[in-house]
Length: 512
Image (cartoon, rainbow, N blue to C red; front, side, top):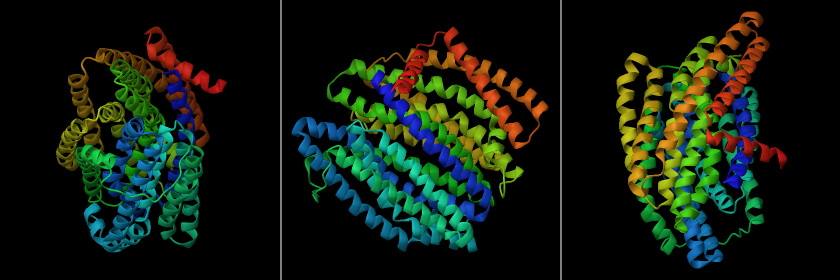
């Protein structure tokens, strides 16, 4: 587990750098475009290629790792490499076809994804989408490249290419201000292509060699397809969830969709930094434990991972709720991003933050099921989550507007994680779920104590330093630092076992 923790910390550092640049990207976008029509269009079309390919691409990415180990253990390394090329080639052909269809039917796609876009806004969205549709191909290739590097225990390259990607989009934003908004879409496409290009040498260094082998009747492909069908249905339901949220937000007038996006991006920072970083490392190990029929270590890593996530995420959630407005103001409020934009974004952020814990633990449990070759249970739970979310969307949108959409998302995540805990227990037997509950309660106690200190420090410093940019940055930094110290002390007093694991991981990283 110590090596796993070290790799997770390395990925966190690389992800942190990438996400900081991602925040800078969002800040620059907010500065020039605020919550305007162009911002809404870019936010929507920027995500559509990912939404389209995720139903197939994400499923293949998640099934590739356990299938790679299965193929290698049964048939050897050469056959596993042949399997990799087969997947790459099949997915490339599929992605090109999807891209062409997307370009042809761009107008129809925008009508589906943004029912509230009309006139100039609709036409601009169609043009943006036609430019970005070939991103489907680059996203698909990047998924398999990252998965191949993970099974070779090379985690850093796939994390660090996000830095280059964000730099490209930042450059595109500046160019778009001078030469036209279309360069936003061009920049996003170029950024995706460069990611694929940069990962190729890393793959070759780890033993990858390309060959044009494509056989859809291959034994491993057939097995993957059978396992993937329920997963595709689950992912499709999740994407329906995203579609409904964006479609409903598009009916609320200019700025609401962009505000939800900015809040979601801030939320995603935590998810990518702590959740995705850990999952990236543990998923291959879960698959190996299953292949080796090592149930004891499989259960241990599920519990340890869940506890580590809870330990880190709980205080962040409370901190985000308390400091949402000053955080958004410091990061985004400048240029076209007004005080009204800050209010909308911070309200959405508070509600999205509530669901982070549920989402984080759900992702770990899902990988556990996929490693076990069970793709039906996550699909059923995802379907339940989507149904709950859509019902709550429709109930909350009228009284709470865009905030209702964020609230519905968070509630659906919390319900899903409870269902998945019971499902996994039924499948593998007791896995010390009480330890997870205990860690959550102790983390919550520490986070509440932390929150009191954060409020006191922030309010007192703001009263002295004022709300200037420097004053607010100082107040935020001091209150966050004070909160972290108090939380660590509380975890020590409450004897949370995973606290030592986190400390050792950080120490080992800096020793390296």
